Length: 185
Image (cartoon, rainbow, N blue to C red; front, top):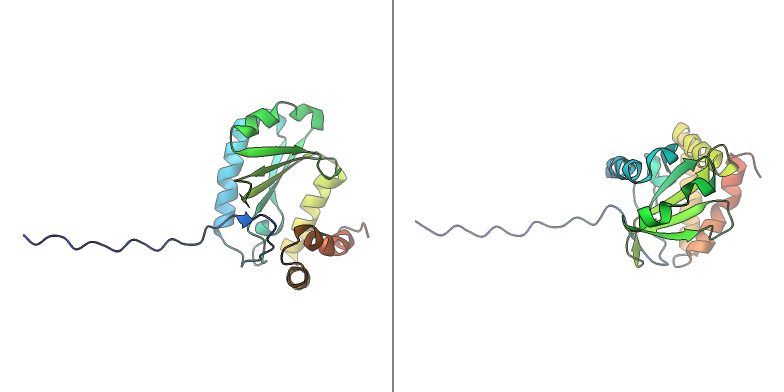
């Protein structure tokens, strides 16, 4: 009997989520992001329990047809930030690093993935707060308007071209547009 031919190793696809520290890169929307969110949502529901009043996929990875940085944003609603007091330990065991309210936005911020390649940003915010309504309002506006999505994507591509290694400047370049969509301009 002839020996079996060795099969070539399958080509590995570029990971769906993850971005090197400091890099600004936009990729086409991927359907796999919705499934990745569903898995992460189930994991978070188990970890956080009933204190997590709602868990939503927000940001550009939540909007079909919109180019995005390949980092998933998730917003978690709580009664109050104090109600999430034990969460740093629970989330730490699941690979999330806690940063507190690092930008004085009224949220607890977490990042998942190794420091050099984050995959998820988790925003814990009070339900009913401007942060919560802003996350959902902006996402829903983009989902409902192809014209708005196209304008936002053009802005993102210009900002990325100007700031390919400066995420803070990239994010700042989008601020006025986002505030305008939310009526907070």
